[in-house]
Amino acid sequence: MRYRTLGGTGIEVSAYCLGTMMFQDGCNSDHDDCVRIIHAALDQGINFVDTADMYGQGESEEIVGKALRGRRDDVVLATKVHFQMGEGRNRSGNSRRWILKAVEDSLRRLNTDWIDLYQVHRPDDSTDVEETLSVLSDLVRQGKLRAFGCSTFPAEEIVEAHHVSEHRGLGRFRTEQPPYSILARGIEASVLPVCQRYGMGVLVWSPLAFGFLTGKYRKNQPIDLSTGRPTIRPERFDPTIAENAAKLDVVEQLVELAENIGCTLPQLAIAFTVAHPAVTSAIIGPRTMPQLEDLLKGVALTLDDAALDRIDEIVPPGTNLYNPNAPLPPRSLTDTALRRRPLTDRAAA
Image (cartoon, rainbow, N blue to C red; front, side):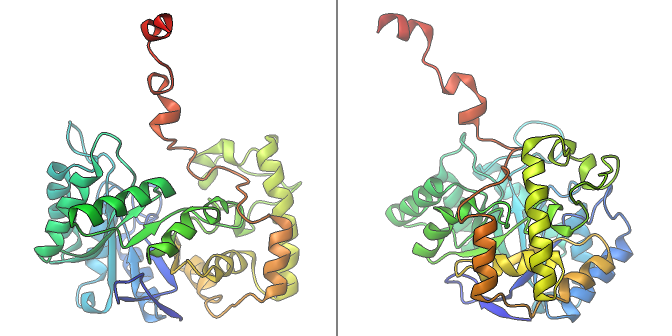
């Protein structure tokens, strides 16, 4: 296993980070099996575990807490806050009120006194970023957090957050967790360069492109939309949609490349993400032990220039073949009131 420093934190983490989103009801609800998977990952050298409060409404955090009993000091533990937890108002977002409650809940579920990396899961346009940075800074001073970061923030909001931190004397985002894969390279244009400029660690999610780079879905082969990931967002797998047909064409070329290199498609896909100099770790999210074992076989794989050049030919740098954030577009695009002046203003003009 290779290890890298997480941004400017001085914390050393494995180049593969174990993601635990699959450890919940509807995915893998066998807690004992999930604990075994976590232990197997730790035994193979992974020391970085990522979860979130919203995964199974806390179930994933509880499983991680069980698995880390007696091993907590050896693990860099990351979790996240932002999404709705339970019913009622003020149980989501990035406000001081909610973060103070959410962090205590996460600490209890994780059965720990501190969180190594606490991440703001998404931007919140209803909360001033100074409010968020202020409460996170307070939690670091209290010893409940070692560092904090953001997840799936656009480049301009990362820059704004650093500007506020500098001018208000607050702690700053030390990491960013964006989506990144061979099929979704959009962050290469601005997010990754911005993270490098500010010395941020980067842990990328969905390196297998929502399952498209597992090798399970191939061109001219039937795709079962009734099981697995296609049940979550079937439109991402329907081969009659042009975007999906393009992805399947790319998969065929990547399968050939992987065979020439002597690795599997998933191993190629993850090795690609950790080859970028801005990326610290790639999050792998196995649901079963065999999936974990297959992914870990590729930890020593390093892609040479010829392989990376061929990937650039197949999917040009900075290109998204699909929108990895499609389920959660920003309100600036979804709320028409934010895109149109009131009729009275237009009439006056």
